[in-house]
Image (cartoon, rainbow, N blue to C red; front, side):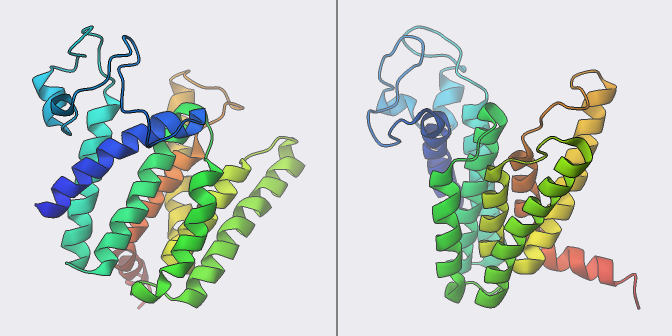
Length: 250
């Protein structure tokens, strides 16, 4: 329960990060305000999930609708923190898993809205991921270093190939740095699984959107969203997925 409540509180802060960081604003000050009437959000109206329900999804002062993403991010982060505790127990691994998942949530929602993956998250994330390796049991420092290098190298290689074939850039440099950060936390195996899941899921979503006429062949998709999904799946399910895969090769 403690991890769940902590996750809800962290999710509330992630909402601030997601809204302000791409706009070059401080994530600390000023206090949260309604974007419509500019009134400061009262403390009692800033309780994760509960305030949204009590206010019925509207600002107390001007009755403007509160975006659906606010409770969604809070709930997602709460579930992520609870999952980290259930998977890794009361340990540093659980704390690091929750921290890493929070970075993925922030990057996914920022990329979905702005098509950008801020260096202020990805570059420090690479360093932090490598520095935390002594506390992590799911990979090693060597694997993390190789994962970071491979993550960046694979995306750069795919970008070069896409340019040769279509004369367009398939991925942004933000994707390169994000996958390098994922490698720094999850290691070489985690990068491979993340890239497989994100590419598969991204391709399926893109195909469905094209069939429905929502996008064109050259339309951009926020690949950071799919990288985040793949990374979180890898974080929690990599051993089980690799064991399942290897079971086909007796």
